Length: 88
Image (cartoon, rainbow, N blue to C red; front, side, top):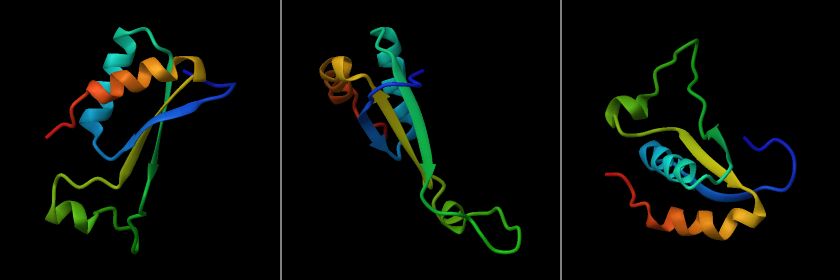
């Protein structure tokens, strides 16, 4: 977990499986990292919690996942991220 200090974003994407694979790879390499996520759209309408896009396409996600590392670990982390294939 990275709380204080400079952080560099090495991954931002909507594929949760790839995000988890990169996290595993960083843990195995003993690189400290931080994570985060944002929701790109808010489901709305009178308390409705069903996202119509997810009903039509079960693989759709409104979340964007982020990974951060320290600047001194950036080169090693980027090399690991490039080697992780996108999940299908």
